Image (spheres, rainbow, N blue to C red):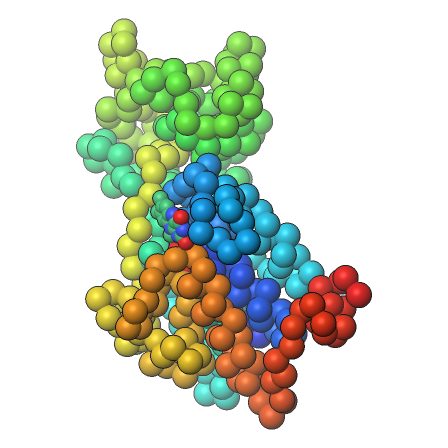
Length: 341
Ligand SMILES: Cc1cc2nc3c(=O)[nH]c(=O)nc-3n(C[C@H](O)[C@H](O)[C@H](O)COP(=O)(O)OP(=O)(O)OC[C@H]3O[C@@H](n4cnc5c(N)ncnc54)[C@H](O)[C@@H]3O)c2cc1C
């Protein structure tokens, strides 16, 4: 039987709003576990525009999107939130004795008193590269994220792409794979210059191969990949390939949220504006994923929603306990929780 992880609050999505919710819930002593499909916190800020400056976060005339995520992570540290990355929340069901059972796409099981859906624009899904017949190898030889590094041990690995994911995994998997070939259409990369330099250094010492070009064909049978054809400036080359990791960017889809029986408004979750609760008691929705009259998809709106949601969640997690409104500036008990008093 699958091991069950228990928590007060399960947060679906570790974007800026899910992260700030940890802070607001933490002030009321509620323990949070966040699950995200991505391999890092930050949602759209980290994935879509990490280097862009944001100008409308109160108190910050200008802040980089990744910098905001880093600050939020620092702000929630006193509450020791638990994270499960690289997993999609697939199913939720109500438990007979109260609370919910939440399952991921890898069948991990969580039990929680409250669910907070902070899923933004929905689940980030990898874009499939235009290689004929690639579907036949997906999940057995072709993967769009690295869930278990062991999957790549002693394999002939081809990584396709020029962004941070492609370069990070090239460097991380090189020591355990039998061979690594990075394929990118051009010699310029979007990834961090330091990673690019490290990759070129490994190419110099022949510890990996870098090829300019595109993967145009795959060979193999029964879902087992054996070769990849790379079309480059000098024509086609066929190389051994038993695992492939294409990183062609991500699109956002609502994903399994549509099947959770929550009241929707044009693919967004309908909530009230007092508690930001959905049509299902005990399930809240905050940030870009929710809808109410006048909703603005701004980070600051999500932060406000998190504060009000936390008060309502506390009443469910600790029924009968008085919910006292306090300022962090003047409450010693809040300051103790933050580790500053
Ligand atoms: C280019 C660009 C510029 C922007 N500029 C600004 C700006 O200047 N100011 C501003 O206020 N806003 C701006 N925004 C909007 C802002 O980024 C969003 O409002 C904000 O990211 C919403 O935060 P969130 O936490 O609700 O959702 P997201 O940031 O979308 O995070 C949601 C997370 O949930 C995860 N998720 C979804 N479904 C599941 C599931 N089933 N299981 C597990 N995980 C799941 C996703 O992987 C994602 O990481 C901008 C957006 C873009 C694209």
